[in-house]
Image (cartoon, rainbow over all chains, first blue to last red; front, top):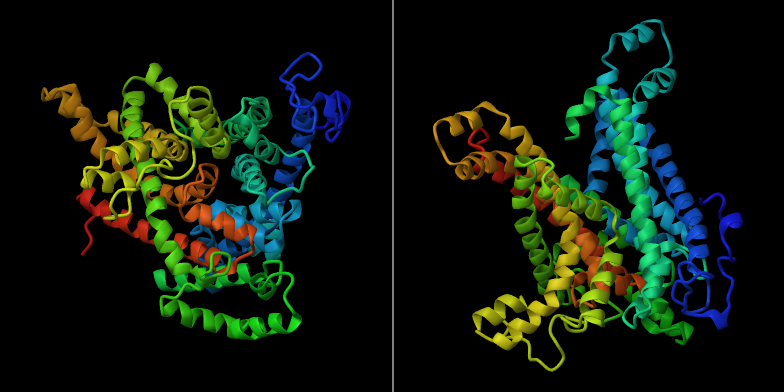
Length: 254
Length: 326
């Protein structure tokens, strides 16, 4: 849906038609229009691209930094490993939304700041997961065998340990995408995310905030529903993947 | 274990807030100030010093219990926090209360009667708690209960405009008005408290329900439960006396961790409901690029979080006789 936005959307995301402003949902505007006469349905479709793209980049950042950190800490252990994991614990001690807010404000309001913030907040979870996996996998015989063969540490980590840790990582990525969508839209709602007039769901709700009291509910209801369904979709996907990928983990989900 | 963590936390908050955009000296003096004045303020506050000196000053300052100065309010952060803390405390406590009062019985009911109506409710709740953005939920609640039904007063502040707040005893309006038997204030403050705390409680409610349900399911199938039933105890006492205590232990960690999430959620909830607490204050500070309150908030929430975890671990000893701390 998000990919096809330019073809499906009946109007441009920032197409202003003041003569059509604040229309309730009707045949021409399925989800109504906002205070500038912009079509909500079209803006939600375009907003999906912003949201999903932000989520993916943010989780990408978290993976690229978190997974190697966890792997190094788990594989080499010792002082470096301890230091890395202590640092991750400290990052985890911050409530994620507060840390993301502080980070987004530090880096500067705007999409880049928001996605970096969401990415950094997600790093410790990936590092912890990878650490746990690495510690278990590195004791297995096949790792011992490759070490005996003189394979370099980096290839052991990337060619032997990483593929074996892939299943839980994929699950974590999917679940992480869900929370990334939620945090990004919260930041936008608070004015720390995208700049207007970009169609972003959290920002759209923030515009609708003043209108919901006077009865123009559609400006708020539809973007919120979009966030909720997207997040829930990722969570369901993550849960489903866990069941498929991890035959031993059935007991973790009851 | 806690000391190095605290030093780490302090370092992170310091680094974070010193890369904020905007010139802090310019923020204090205002955009129109003369360059000499701006320069003077910069020297006065030490913004022209190298970062490590600023950091050392920051630590010394913290050790004195000084959290800095909030330019946008013109007060010290500590006094701003002190005046706003009761509002946030009242909100988080009320949310935790609502969450637990719903979650514990619901979790038990969902586990003891699988696929019953309670089980379905717990699933819907888990959807709301995990996926519905809290700011959206808050706006919908306002739209329904204030704008549409008119059951509750305008969602601004802790008490309605024309009503005097209760005598200050604890700073929690509901408790204070009970203590001073001020029924008008009690009614108004309860009306103002209900929506924000309900909104904030959803996430915690969902997670705790899920946890209680899962651990209850595990406990129910164990031998001691069958023994308890076999020796003729009523169903009720089997579930509450034997089941609940045992399923509460794993849930306790989750409940403790939820305080952190509640603090984060409070920032958004307070912004929506114009609740005069710390969360609202932090949003204002971020929007006006004010360092000190953000540092203080991140710092305090992280330390609080560590502290709550400590309490949770100690509580394990109380609930589970196998874990005793010497």
